[in-house]
Image 1 (cartoon, one colour):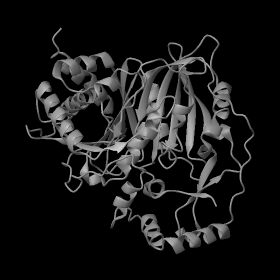
Image 2 (tube, one colour):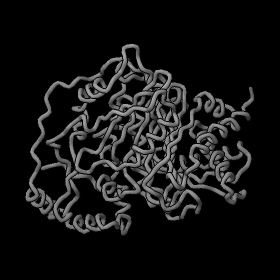
Image 3 (cartoon, rainbow, N blue to C red):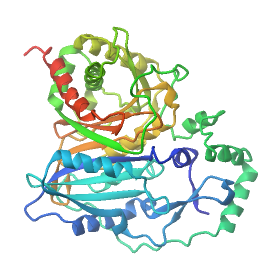
Image 4 (tube, rainbow, N blue to C red):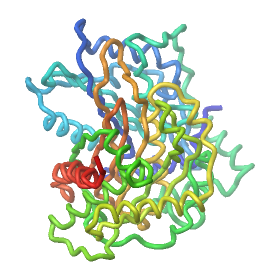
Length: 470
């Protein structure tokens, strides 16, 4: 019998529409090695590793009549070159052109008749660089059985870390009759499943107790949020969104955040959130929005990794616990240090009261885990009502050592977190090899100035850093 999608995985299939494609992405920028790096090398690298993630050769097939959740089946016509694609910028390509390409690619839903992922090799970047852009559907990446493709292609040394030892032979696709028989068999054991699946397909995904069941089914990767009953403040981030996106980035130094941590007895994560609070404050003011001393924006911070001092000194350490938190960012506070203290207090309250969930499965993941963890963060955001938060912020620590795709050294990595309905902005943050990289994914109409917000992130960090005694 084929594997049936979990309730959480199926929810991301049902939630998807033209304006809200449910895929998470990543943009990795590499230095081209002396021997070069081309499309054929990337295809060969992925081909040699696909046996580690068999789900990437499977597609989603619905059950006739939607009597049960869809199933994963082998794609008997799987074509790797359809999923690994080639693009180029007009030489010498600059970062703005790359970001525009990312925005266009992330605007397009994945083909639902094929395995739900794509990877692009982008050539033509100036200064001897190239980029790899990845897209993977939230239904695909669960962090336990299946990791993100961006995690798969990277190694800690310039060599191929895994080679396939066999030929893949797809299983035959089950007939519609077989799918119906399997669904009826499952319904005997769980008759409520048919009703709930029909409601989900009809768009009633957040009705009744279904949201709670989705959260409970998430494999213990997120915690329930006790304050979910309260609505988030209204504002320009909660609007009807279009299918098109804009993408911008900010580059900062991990040492700067560590200096702020030492000066103000906070965590690096607190400093990141306070920096974003300062940037969002400036952005609101630049738009002429009313900002008072009590103005807040509520952030959903999924999979916030607890930053024990010991963990932060170990490269690539992911910490011991994972939870999803609602944090009211004090964007009305004009003083950067007071903003930081507000954020630190809010995070301490969460750490003291939230139900913690063991993250052993996440800590055992090899390679570059942040792409997978950002996927899980986006999954967490998709499992909660959009009325309770204004913006999603995923912040995932990465290894503080160089990583490679083949012989090409990765220089930067920017997450691309998907938007959900009526959410105009999502922010992903990843630390890597001494840098902290912000990826800002915004609705093209509502966030036409997302590049200004990215610049404000860097300015907000400078403001906080100016409070550190030399």
